[in-house]
Length: 114
Length: 111
Image (tube, rainbow over all chains, first blue to last red; front, top):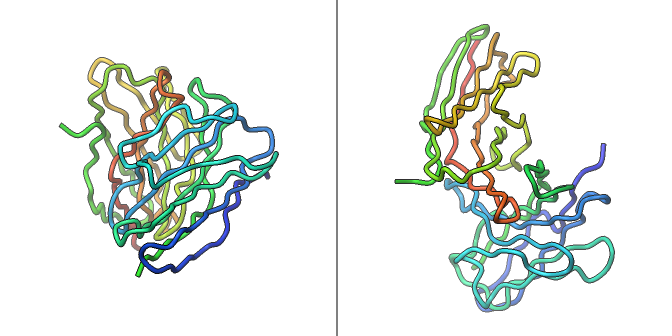
C-alpha cells in the first residue's frame, strides 16, 4: 500500500540553525500539506501546496518557513532560523484531490530545538 | 468558540463495550469530515470519511449532522487495540481542503 514517507524521523538542532524536513508524498497525489503538533496539543495546519505553489498558509507559517518541491518526488519544509517554540512533530500529508479528498499522513519528523 | 471541539476524555471502557464520540464544528462552510486515529507519538491515521448519509466500516459507524454541526463516531465491540486518541478533522473546500483538527478524545479499552 502506498504511503507518505518522511526523513529524518528525529532532528535535533540548536536555536538559530536552519533545518530542512523532507517528505515523499504518495506518487499519484497532487496536493501536499505540512502540519505540526506540539507535544500534548492538537494537530495544526501549516501550509498547503499545489501545482508548485503555496495555495494556503496559516498564521504560524511566517517568513521563517518555506516549502519546495525540488524534484518530482520530494516535498520539503525549511525553517530558516529555528526557535525553541518550533520544537514539535512535523507531519507531511498528501491527497489525490482537494474536493473532500482524504489526506494521508507520513510518520512525522520530531524536531527538537535546544 | 473553538473551530472543532471534542470531549478530551479519557473514555475508559471494558472490552466488548460500545462507545460513542462526538465532535462539533463552528464553521458552517465546512465541506468534508473525517475521523483519524492517533497512537501515542505517531501520525494521524485515517479511520474513515464521514458522509451526510452516514457510513459504516466494520465495527465503526460515523454520522454527520449538518444542521447541528456535529459528527459522531460509534465503536461497537471495543477491542484492546482500539485504545488510542480519536481525532475529528474538518475540511474546507475553498481552502484547498486544509484540515482543522479537534484536540482528540482519548479511549482506553481495558480487559
